[in-house]
Length: 280
Length: 151
Image 1 (cartoon, rainbow over the protein chains, first blue to last red):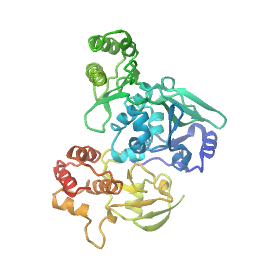
Image 2 (cartoon, rainbow over the protein chains, first blue to last red):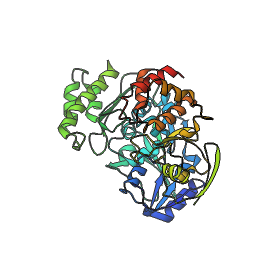
Image 3 (cartoon, helix red, strand yellow):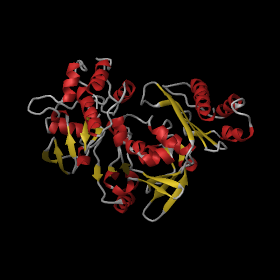
Image 4 (cartoon, one colour):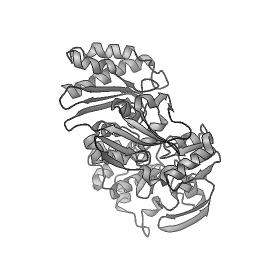
């Protein structure tokens, strides 16, 4: 229950961190809040030989409005984002999702970018990023690229990040005032990993619905059928049919927490509750 | 690597291995055994302490990461053997039995008091306490202590 030996670097700034990462390559792991990485290291499921601590890179933390997007620095603590008026006002679905992330003490240390880069299938923040069509900014020493959430999360704990890149921020489109959101999840205990989570956002004019399902498959799913169906069908009358069709198309996870069939049934209930909460 | 930080108001300097967990540094090097190591994977919350004003799991931080920081443990709560109001509330409401989880809960609550984030209802108190496992009390005494003490 103690981590294997490693060398630790505490870079002065982002350039320094990127330089260290380029130098050490795949031997190095970045550490932000450490709320997922350190348990893995304590259990020796992760044994990096070099750790680069991003907590010393002030430029990676902070939340700001920039035109029609909200930019949240990767090292912004989850609790800071949860308490942020900017996030509450302009990305209410993210606020709603953050309430379900871990516990007060783990949110005080855990970061937004760390959770995204970790890409746990049950991560509330990954689900919110997918549903909100957020993008992430990835940097190496020479280039900066912007990747859509749908292209960033590839598989269970696998992302499009290259070994020399740092996820530096998440960029979320501003939700206009009057946007309605609903985020629900089912877990055995509060703060535990979700068995199923659903996220829904309705635009203020009521003309666009964004829907996502998390913890159900290797990567959270954008429910395109329901989103499209919302434009053409009569909801809530057609909702059950749309949900059944949506879930039938998902390759549901089966693990110690729940079987695939249990997950698919729970997802249908969770999703229906979420959609009804915003449209009724 | 060299570590310089403040622990319970006192300047500490030590030569440590990067892999040394903060909880082990506190218990084994500084001999402050009030902080308890439980699961060592961030689940139980027993090792929660305050670093730079925030409650954190000391089993999920490396001691090296507290360089330049201010660390507080449960030993900082009482002064001159007089219990703090928070500790007295726990005593009054029988909020502990074996006491293993208590330091982590007290430090989480202490941080909330200082951050003006004290639970305003029983529901909020229970939600907060879900971050700390207690196998003795059933939490009722702690909820009573939180509501009884008030913000």
